[in-house]
Amino acid sequence: MTSKYYYGQFTEEHLKLLKTGISLYNEEKFWECHEEVEDLWLADYGDDARYVYWVVIQVATSLYHYLDDNLNGAEGMIRKAKRKLEICEKKNVETELLYKYLSWEKFKKIIRKIPEKSKIEDYNELYSFKFKNPNHWDKL
Image (cartoon, rainbow, N blue to C red; front, side, top):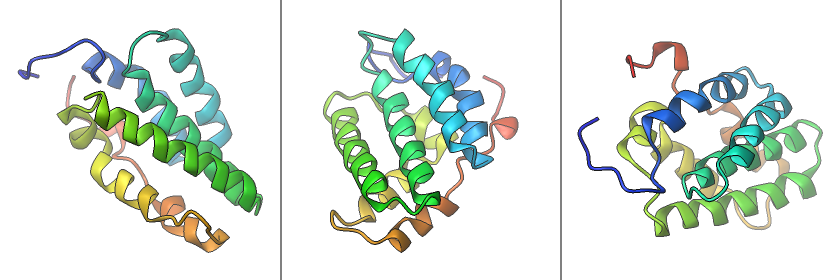
């Protein structure tokens, strides 16, 4: 990538590390995705780019609760994910990599469409969302 990088922004290295977690998410292995990405989140303490990991963790956990018809759990996690999205934007964490490789704009839009007081079916679109397949990502 040719864009100028600033510390705390999402990089190619972050993207490479996230590959397994994204694959698990796309396979609807939401708890496994959570576990995989949580390890990345813990290892990146101090780097604001970890907020991207945090969003993925919380959305995966929300969908894990959705599959169990646990509306309270799904709502709580999606509320937290929305706050992390705001932090990503305010701290200028997002880079074109998120938009190109993860369909980040669509992902954010679907998350934000879920109302504060939701019903379990409000998560259907998010559940059917899949990130771009990591096996088809361009060479990084």
